[in-house]
Amino acid sequence: MKENNPVGTKLVVLGGLGEVGKNMYCVMYKDSIVIIDAGISFPESDLLGIDYVLPNFTFLKENEDKIKALIITHGHEDHIGAIPFLLQSVNIPAIYAPRHAKELISVKLQDRNIRFDNLNAYEDESKLKFGDIEVEFVRVTHSIPDAHGIALTTPDGTIFTTGDFKFDLTPIGPVADLYKMATLGHNGVDLLIADSTNALNSGWSTSESNVDYALNEMFDAYPQNRIIIATFASNIYRVKHIFETCYKHNRKICVFGRSMENNIKISIDGGYIDHKELLITADELKNYKTEEVTILCTGSQGEPLAALSRMSNGTHKYVKLRQDDIVIFSSSAIPGNALSISKIINKLCLNGVRVYTNKAYSDLHTSGHANEEELKLMMHLIKPKYIMPFHGDYRMLKHHANIGINCGIPKENTFILKNGDSLNLVNHKITKGESYEGEDIYVDGNRIGEIGSAVIHDRQSMKNDGILVVIMNVDMKQRKLLIKPNITTRGFVQVNANEELLRKIEYIAEKVIKNELKKEHGTFMSIKQELNKNLVPYINDLTGRRPIILPIILDIKKENTQIKKEKVTKEN
Image (cartoon, rainbow, N blue to C red; front, side):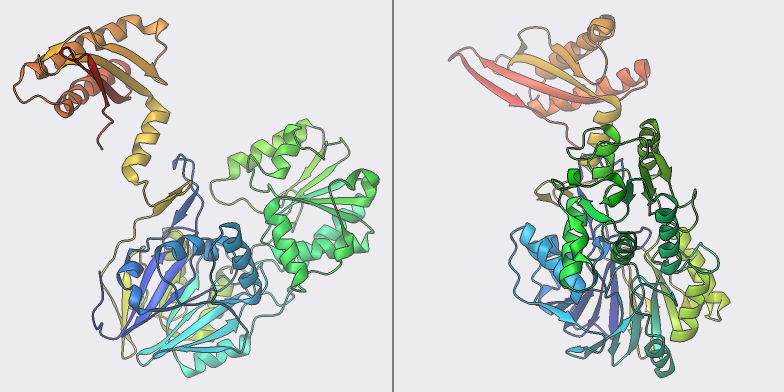
């Protein structure tokens, strides 16, 4: 829906609600649109064949002439991962990102051969202006360097988005700018958009320095063992103190995993990680004793192709597990990954190695997101009139709204929205706006947005119930079925063990085809439709399964012996 002369300031949420991932929303005032973040989420197991899930860009395409800039809060994939796809779909005049995120975006665009000449870095004190939209930045603490909250001010009021944050008074990196937050609150904030990821967790999150202490204890406890650490490649502060711990314990570091290697290189070049001299290559690994080496790798979420998975399977080119190895999961399970992580841990244990996770050994990981008490502190610093919980599934958003109510925000001033919803800010008052397209966009290989819910449904059907192919030779001019239809299956039943069932299906298919051919206006499509109409319920009654019916019609024209072959695929 193209917006013509909208009244007031409009906030449109394109992703990040009812989910943890693909964060994206935009603020519009008159003829100016500023986009905040462009993230992806990774597909769950039911999205067969899908590589990434993107926000819906339809609103931006229809209002492309108003877009002034894309502004990034920090460099995690759920905030920058959609940028290459966005640039292929919508004209973005400029991108502004903190220094670390800017380098990550540059690498991402280079990998996809996308040239973009207006990628800019901002600092804590930077101020930007796009028409009547003024933008300033507030340093926050997160698990990656250069994370920021963003304040956007228009003549209608001020919106402050926290980005991903926590309050950590002993962080590995800089402390959050509490003074600037309090100043914003003193000057007046109308809407707070706040990270809800850990809203269900009571109390305060663990300080990153506690993890540093716990890892040091592990290194002290196993001075003669090879230590393998799996963590998030993007958790730069975790990687930073792993480097520092290895430096204290005179260990070299060998890195496995492309994303880990890229993040470490960018962080070393940017001055976020010291002790570059500790790095050794995979080929050099054999030159060191086990107690002289730490292996830092990807695979903390049980990804089947990640380095740790290949080690557990015995298929890694450079690392063969030993029974005196120590494997540390310095991470927590992303929702939906618990089973795959458990499988990897079981395989590691079968290899005889000792495995430590955050539950088994205290403080081996801490989240970069705020717990309940930290969310309260943010509200008291910012003092918003209205709040919109963000970045979380529904129960997280709901609990976050209740936290706001307990902090004195009226219930009617809390907004729990879904992707595609909008808010209108007019003269410091906020009301619910209209809804826009918010359906997910799927990336399948090089195809963006071509795969819809109907195709996903078919893939799930094929996975669960298989395919039944009906091959028929017909003479459409004579309106005759020349021979009995041939029935074959893939993933439905074993042919040799179900001959009687297949004969029954063949009989019904033959009857349906002949009936359609008798009709004056019977067509390929009508044959296909009638086969589906008759075979699907019949097969379901007998077997409890609903395979996809794929008719293949061979039109045999006797007068010129030309064979026309037409494959009729299932219409959704």
